[in-house]
Length: 230
Image 1 (cartoon, helix red, strand yellow):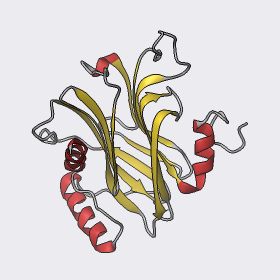
Image 2 (cartoon, rainbow, N blue to C red; image 1 turned 90 degrees about the horizontal axis):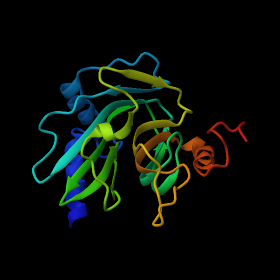
Image 3 (cartoon, rainbow, N blue to C red; image 1 turned 90 degrees about the vertical axis):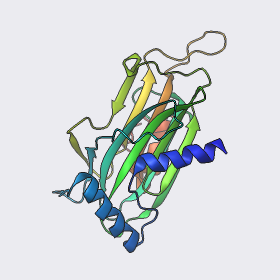
């Protein structure tokens, strides 16, 4: 029941997000998106374009003890088949991978689309949860039981864009939309450091056609997502 409640909260954070790719739903979502943040002309529609969206003061609904929310406006080109990879618990500092990974994908877009992307860390009853919403997909996962956020200054926080910033990416890139991690590496029950792993969460976006390369990179089988890298 609690997971259902948190999922509902994520939808509240996300605002006007379409539920599927039917044209009528897309038009309704775009109308609402333009009302919220204004019209947005993308110069090169073959690129992935990401802009920062301010989070409204009333975005956090009642019943949440603490919350940190990041929200972007996302342009995806035609023929882009969206994949995302979400990791919570243990993450790596400069590439995908870690523990407690989840992924989702969708078919190629018939035409360019825009949507909102939301990442949130919320605390209810002493438990921190990591929530994401992209397009019609949402995920909610628990952070470690003793994980706590007193101040974001205690963490390395890497949003893909900052306030008043717009970034442009090639459609074949893997894009780290968000990463938050502790500044020191995680340890096991005996106090031994876990190699390259930090407690935190991360959210990557990439195209379906690069999924095999992305997964090889996440597994440490190559140094980057580029297929030419050993």
